[in-house]
Image (tube, rainbow, N blue to C red; front, side, top):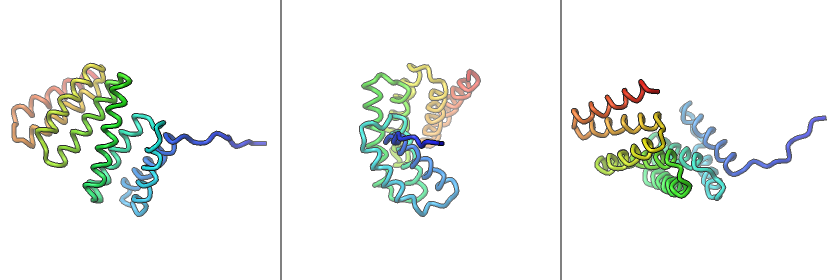
Length: 173
């Protein structure tokens, strides 16, 4: 006889499920229930037990939903709040890689708003945390993002240098 597990899914697990479902809907271009999923996600994110990676993944999802379906102020503000929460928790626990991710993704939100100087400054801070944590894939990511921002600012020489640093990191990986 098979017994079902009596363990209830944690808020973290429920949030991950909603993130995965919403991401799949965005990937397929069918997002009729996206608003409902985002509301449900907010419920699970309100729990203190939600992990830093879930906060960051949720912010990435909200950014993507905002870029593809609108509601910029609402979704961007929610994403920003989640990133601040993730960054604070990561800082408190000494998790430099997660702190780097939260700051770097916040920089993406600033870039979306056209705040290139703020985006560049935050990305440079994220890069420092990534270097301190020896997270090469994250170091690569922020060098590439710095290159993109500098290219938008029409500083081609500095952008080329940032991209070259990103390529060098890739060769190490």
